[in-house]
Image 1 (cartoon, rainbow, N blue to C red):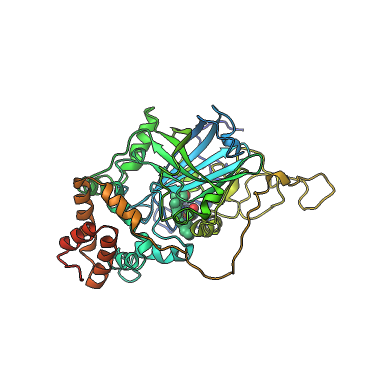
Image 2 (tube, rainbow, N blue to C red; image 1 turned 90 degrees about the horizontal axis):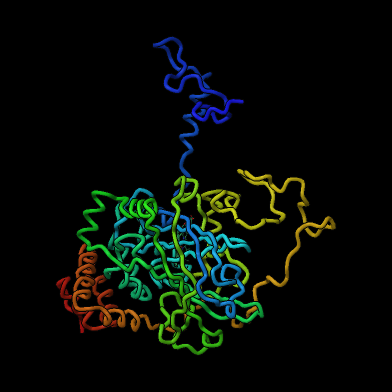
Length: 483
Ligand code: HEM
C-alpha cells in the first residue's frame, strides 16, 4: 500500500495519471466520456455548496474552552458548571445576520454569538447575539421580519422602505433598533464585543429546584466599535476584516477571552416582576438581578478547515443538557423548532455525526440510517425499544423539572405593551456625542424611505421613548412632529 502523501488519487484512492489534460480523441478531438476522473471532478465541484444559512450566513469560528471560576451548583446541576477549575471544550461561531455568505463583515447588523459546549453529558448550545434583546418577541413574526432585512423580490436590492415599515409597525423593535443604530451596531472586531444568551432560560439544581437565568459574555478585550466611515471603507477594502482579525489574533497566540456571567431570578419573581421577564425585547435590571461570574471562555485554536467546521457547525437553542432548560419565551419556543429543521435541510439528517457537531460524550440511541451516515450506524447493537437485550435505557432523574401551566389555548400577545421605557432609558444613558451619532445614523438610514407616513410613525416611537430623541430624528429628516 502506498504511503506517499503527495501522490494524487481519485476519491476512491486510485492514483491519477493526468490531472491537467482530459482524455480526448486525439489532440484536437472531443473529450471522451470514459474520462471518469474528469466526470467525478466536475460533478463533485457542482456539489461543493450546501445551502447557506437563511440568516447568519457569513461567519467566523474558533475552538476554545470554558473554565469554571465560581461554584454555582446551588443553581444548576449542569455538568459543565460542576466544579471550579473544570474546563469544557467548545466551538464558537460569530456571524452577521442579514448578509449573504460573501457579504462584508463591517456592516451595521447584530452579530451572532453561538457557542457549542462539548460537555460530558452531551452538547449544550447557547445560540445568542451580541445584543441582550431582539427586534420581535413572538416567533410567528420572524419570517416577515427577516424578509424586510433581506433583498426585495423584484429588484434584488436591500429595501429601507420595508425595514422601517416593519419596525414602525412593530414598536417592540425599538429597543433593539436603538442598540443597532448606536455605536455598538458595528463592533471593531469580533473580539471587542459582548455576547448574550438574550432569552431567559431555566437552571435546575440536583434537588430539582429551578431559577430563571440570563447569560452575559463580557469581553476581556473591552468593547470597541467602528466609526461608520471607517467601517464603510473597510467594507470596500477588506470585506473579511473581522474574519481575518479573529484568525490572525488566535494564530499569533493573542487568545480572546470573555467572562461568562449570569443573572439569576427566583422562579416566583416572574409572576410579580414589573414586566414579563420572558419577553426578549427587555433586559432585566442589573440592580434587581446583579451579574454573577461563573466562568471564563477562551478561544485558543483556529479551525483547520472552514467548511468542515464553521460551515457545517449546527447550533440549536434546543440542544440542552440536564440542569439547563427552556422558558416560556415565545421566541425561544419557536426557535426550538427552527434550528433542527434548518440543520436537517442544510446539512442533512445525520448532521450530529459530523466531527464538529458530534458530542464528545457517548451517544447511545435507537436512531439509525439516513443519508450520509458516516459512523458505524450503531453496528449490530439493539435497534429498537423496549427490548430485553440490555439496550440503553432512559434515566428518569434527567427528565426536565415539571413546570405548571394554565390558561386557554389562544393566539395571545404578551400582556404588557411598554415598548418605550427601556429604549428611553438607554437613550438617556448615552453621552451627548453618542446621542448625536445615534441620531445621525438613524437619519442616514431613514432618509431613503419614500413614505413620510412610515417616517412619522417611527419618529412617534422615538418620541415616546424620549421626546428629545424623537424631535432630533424629526429635525434631521426635515419633518415636524404632529401634535
Ligand atoms: C441562525 C431562525 C431568533 C441567533 C438561525 C438559523 C435559523 C434561525 C433558521 C439558521 C440555522 C442554520 O442553518 O444552521 C430563527 C428564528 C428565530 C430566531 C425562527 C425567532 C423565532 C434568533 C434570536 C437570536 C438568534 C433571538 C439571538 C438571541 C442566531 C444565531 C444564528 C442563527 C447566532 C447562527 C448560528 C450559527 O452560527 O450557525 N436562526 N432565529 N436567532 N440565529 Fe436565529
